[in-house]
Image (cartoon, rainbow, N blue to C red; front, top):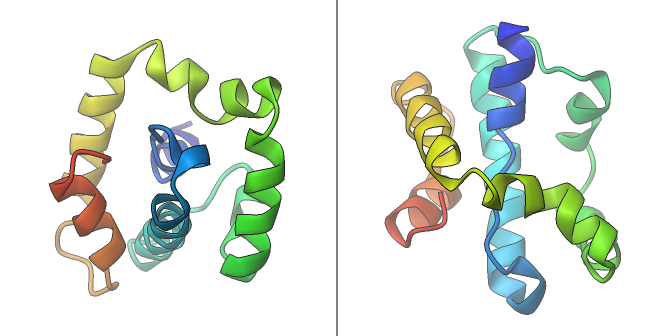
Length: 119
């Protein structure tokens, strides 16, 4: 369960990414950074299909996510539940950043998103 929670925290807590191409691109980069950081820490990525996300090229993920968030179901699935519990998601985000603060993995996209209020 611990690995699953950390893997889930590795996904970005999106704001209106469907309207911002740069934010979507940065979010995808940040998710990949997060997954790499967990791997570096020896934390298993769960569920298994989330492991595959780290292997899929960013441009392909971007196209798939744009198609998904074009529909209400996709927006709710990706961020609706997180937006309903903002204070909890902020705490999880802070805990995750603390967990990965000393990794060697490049975290530039994460740092940018965090500094600009998206992490």
